[in-house]
Image 1 (cartoon, rainbow, N blue to C red):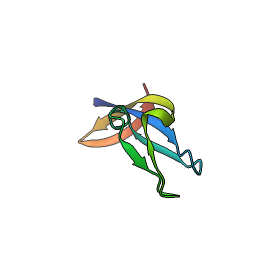
Image 2 (image 1 turned 60 degrees about the vertical axis):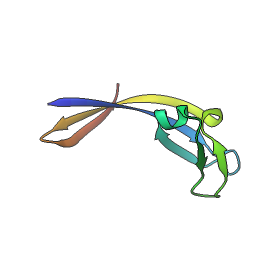
Image 3 (image 1 turned 90 degrees about the vertical axis):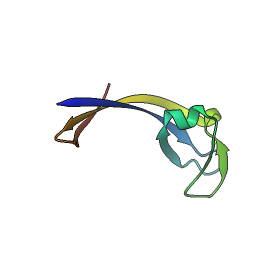
Length: 69
């Protein structure tokens, strides 16, 4: 059994309120994100709601389980 980690960030579109999850490294680059619901572009760093670190359990080269780390 192996483990891998991925930090994610929860964003909220400032126009329509749509929730979006992206890798945290993308948000840290202050990239503009386009909302899939309304099409508005917005700054990912300024519209973060929360961050979580995910632990992925890997068995036989497949993701078998995902937990909060």
